[in-house]
Image 1 (cartoon, one colour):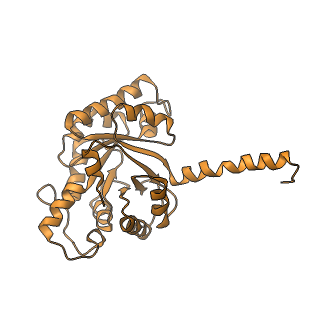
Image 2 (cartoon, rainbow, N blue to C red):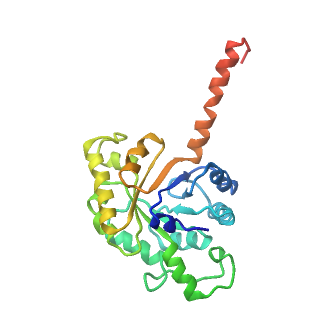
Length: 261
């Protein structure tokens, strides 16, 4: 599996979606067939069990489609368990301080970068016997750590957050951000545009990456053109609803023909 960080280092943009609703391993194959580069399992707002996440991650690894997990909060056990299940990275919601970012690195990275617990006979090694030091160096290099910037405080501290060695991406949550600024869903307001631009500039200055999640493709496009590389579009439920909307056109055609529905 080509890691997401390899693609980012090569200057490529990566496109993913959020899995929020459907706890089925097959969701990974469906998203791969759609053309996504990765997906994020939402364990902040989603109601997935640990076993459901493990099953989805097992399938994603089996088919070579990277998956990350958005953890519900910054706790060691969340980071450790999902990485050992085979997640290629972690998204930490509501990041507002350098200390939160440092804690994420400490839990997600092996020594000397952090203090991730060592248990190598797990899904993340495909239960294979590995050379411990070599594997740990590779894991430290390939594990993608994303801090979600979704508040005024997060924006104000984004430079400090990105200064932490091991943090790779400042990832904007636009809904919570606009709510915190008091302009919910008004993504083109000057103060919101300025906040986005500050996050992008901070990432570039730190030699790191920035990204954002929108439900629609149109609001993603200007930020893709501005240098963001980690783009999350829609969700599993959103994609189903968008596709299912076609039934109304069929209903209208049937009504034109005089059918009783």
